[in-house]
Image (spheres, rainbow over the protein chains, first blue to last red):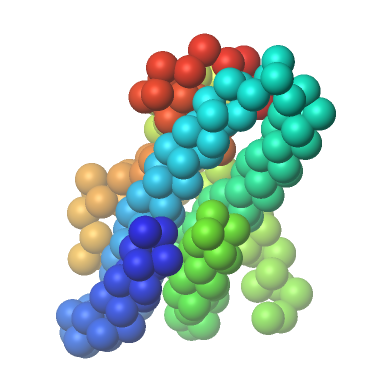
Length: 132
Length: 92
């Protein structure tokens, strides 16, 4: 399901965004891309953690009958959680830097300090990869 | 990226983080803002609003800093999912 969501998100971004943004400022394009990216990341995390909580609950049921297996599975779940948490931190940092670039660009004669939105999409894609 | 631009982005990133804290509702906000003097808060607010692109509304501008994906931790998502499943397990 997450894979399908990811493919749908990328398809929408790749096909529709450039057309819709033809007459928009660089700042507006970035703003829209971040918005779309945030929605996709939020949806992916919700889907990932719903499954995570289900796996956790199922594992809890094995605690007494299979303590060794329980600990192993719990450890694997915590490792996954750590990876996703790191991915989210990186994603948030990337978005914040992009937002900060708007501020940094204010008063600049050259718009070159405005980063491309590729960084934001890349971070979102990385997060999706972690949650697969 | 030249060093000056990189430094500018780093400075801006710190500024954006401070602004995000200002606008974030809920947990930790008061503590995070405690060291910030009142004038500093107004300066940050002015800076982000002055930098707002003309074709982006104030609401949109603020919303980017408060989107769930930018304002929540992985633990928030996990706890929400646990609640949804009514799982009484301690936070990871």
